[in-house]
Structures are given as C-alpha cells and as structure tokens.
Image (cartoon, rainbow, N blue to C red; front, top):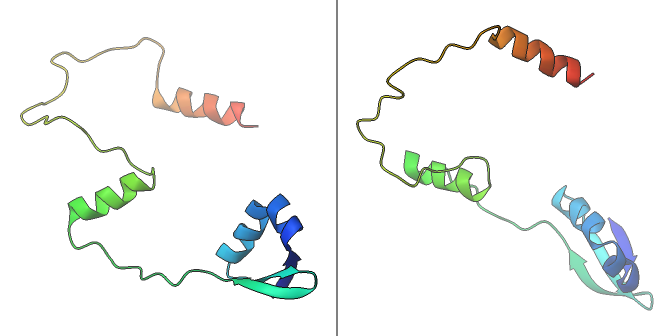
Amino acid sequence: MKAVGVKVLKAKLSEYLRLVKAGEVVLVTERDEVVAELHPAHRQNLAPTTLEEGLQILAEKGQVTLRSENFEGWYGPKTKMKLKKFSTQALLDALREDSR
C-alpha cells in the first residue's frame, strides 16, 4: 500500500494508475489526512459467447481490424505475382539484421 499527496498524484497520475492496475492500493492524502483510496476495479471477465462477439472485443482493444465490406466469393488475384530475387527467408534475414 502506498500513500501519495494530491499534488504529487496530479503530477504523476499515469504512474500511479499503472501501480493500481498492477494490483497496488494507493491512498490519496491531503494535509496528511487520507481522503481517497485507489484500488483496481473489480471487473468480471466474461468469455464471449460467439466468434463475432470475441472479434468485436479484440477490435475495441485495437488488436484486430474488422472488415467493412462483404468479400463473399472473392478468391484473390487472378494472376500470381513473381518477384525476382525475393524470398521470405531474405525478408526475415533483413528484418533480423535491422533489429540488431
């Protein structure tokens, strides 16, 4: 449990919210008197009942993008593209080299 004054809390709100999100309880004080208590919210983690509901939840979190058009009957490009001197292995090697 941590205690923090109102002025410091205002200045470092993001930092204290991260602590609360991680499970820490934070007491907010004003002139050495506790005026509030911040603790993690009690949320129910309900599993989605359908695939669409699960995808919608992921979209709201920004983890997936839902399509906006109906692509029924679409099978991809008619002709295959051939790129010279290109392979997925070469691409992976280049990405690994860039990350070093």
